Amino acid sequence: MRQKKMTPELEEIEVDVLSSKGAQDVGLHIFSTSGLLDGSWYNRTFWMYSKRWPGFQLANQAPKTGQLLVVDDEKTYAVRVFYRRNVHSPMFFPGKEGYLLFADLNANEPQLVGEAGWRKPVAWLPQSHIPRKGNPGLDNVSWGFGRDKGIGYTRAEQPVWKQWLPVRIRAMVKAGDILFVAGAPDVFDPKDPYAAFEARKGAKVVAVSAKDGKKLSETQLEYPPVFDGMIAAGGRLFASLRDGSVVCLSAGGNEHDSSR
Image (cartoon, rainbow, N blue to C red):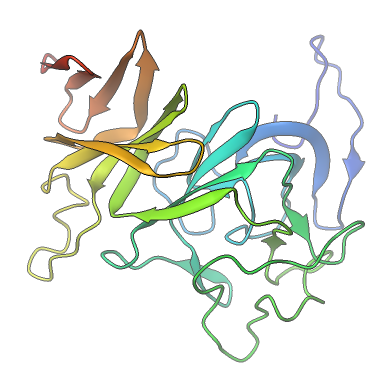
C-alpha cells in the first residue's frame, strides 16, 4: 500500500529506508506513482515493478518501468512512452520512432547512482536527454542518491529485448509465450493532428513473441481499446473498445458485441 507494508492483520511492518528522498524497501510489487486506473500518461508518472517505493525520482531510464506493465514469473514487459528527455521533463513526439516495448528480467532492479551497491548505468535509449546546461545525463554519475533532482533511476543491465512499434499501446496482456498489445496507430496528420488520439484512425492488436519481441501477427480493429482494457481467457482475447463495445478475438474468427 504505497510505501506501507502490512501483515494480513493490518499491522505495519517496519521497512528499510533506502534513500533520504523517501525510497523504501517494501518488497517486490507493482505500483504506480499516480494510480493504476489513471490512463492520462502524464510524463512524470509511471508504473514500476520493484522492491522499493520510488520517492522523489524520475524513471525514464529505469528497468521494469513504463506507462503500462505486464509481469510473469521471469520477466516484466513494459510500454515506454517518454523515452526522450529535456533536463527534468521526459518527452514524446508522435509519429516518430513509435512506442517502446521492452522486456526486463525481474531481477534487474532500478538503481540510483550513489546508493549502496550501485553499478555504472548503461545507455539503452536512443537519446537519454537533450544537451543543455544543467542537464545531468548519464555522464554525470554524481547525481542520483539523496539528490532532489538528477537523472533519477538508471539501469545497470540491458533489457532482454526491445523494439519500437507504430502503435499507441493502451492495452497489453500475455498469454502463454505471446504478448498481445493493442492501440491506435502512431501517426500524425498535420491537417488533423488529434485524429489518432481521438480514435478516428482505427486500431490494431499486435502479437509479439514474449521470448524475443519479434512481431508475429496483427489484427485490425475499428476502435482502440480503453486503457488497460484487454484480457485473455479460454484461448480468446477480449477487449473493451473506445466506442463502448466489446470484441472477442480468436484464431477461428472474431466476434463483436456492440451492446452497451
